[in-house]
Length: 430
Image (tube, rainbow, N blue to C red; front, side, top):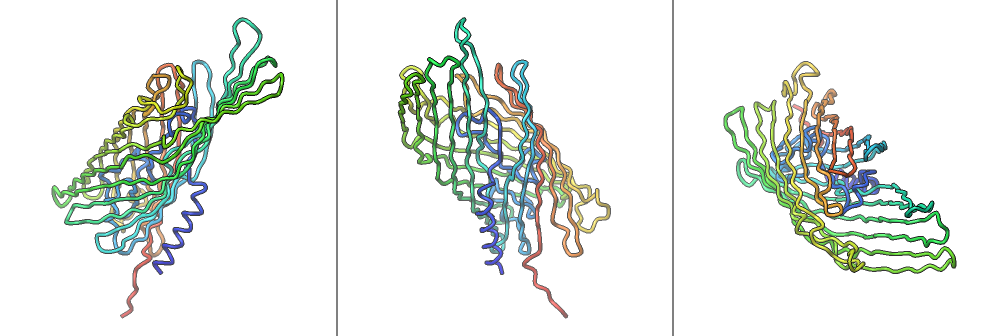
């Protein structure tokens, strides 16, 4: 029965892999590997992604694999999430609105042996999607030049993770992921003057690699009702084995003759080493508050760009910068007892906020900083023989801004459904 269930879930993940990437219409996704996903899920997105010290066997915390050891022997947890967002882009006096809606993630958690849990899932890693154009006059003439910028793609991540409690309160975990995707970015320059050539540049790359992440948690009981959980994570940085290309197409509008040049930079893309730590305090299984810090060492990585002096497509340093992220959040349930009376007393109420610095530069200037404020609810789904499944609803406001650059304000709603069923229980009849 277990083999059948796990095989079915794996098949479902493979089917969903085609649509699991979250969408974006942000012009900032044209830089680096795109917009980084925070990889939060339904239960913690209302806390702005708080995860390091979050240890609850009723939810899938895929960001710290040490938490997998908390799952109990009777649980088979499947968590699915979708989101919709509305974004306002502002530059000077110009404003544009955009809407997107996407399938976000699918994860599962189950126990293999006592104190030994496993998780599988698919989540987005980066997102690319934009389409905009600019017009400008050439000198004092009536000739105008239109530049069109388009891009699509991103990276997805399918993972398998294990977590084991080595001794009371101390757990270690690891996930190995298959990371794959691509990007296709183009710049097209067209002039209103039929005597001026048309120029098109296309940046492309296919990516297929691995990702390794490790986690640790230590649960310390201050008293019977007060618990501190310390968490830490480490992600291995490495080259992705991808060979990005730059194709330049130049068309003579008078003769119709076109010329094409293709430059390749071998083994040019990489992901950075990631380090994180945090702590969560739990009071009587009712109130949880915590704080996380994460460092992504993008500053140590290079990226292929066109050298303005030599016009060569080559790897350059100092394109990225280290990314710092600080998150705080809280989860409160008035009465955590599964048999408590009163619907609103059994709901989870969540709030959170985070601040993140950019990981790329734009024309030598730091990219936009990111501020997120979140709130959410965990609504218990009760039937005659199960009261552990939860409908998680979260609301986020995300602001991305930098001096003299586009300001983005996004309102996002995420709905996550956590199926927590006692599939492995054995009934006994006296």
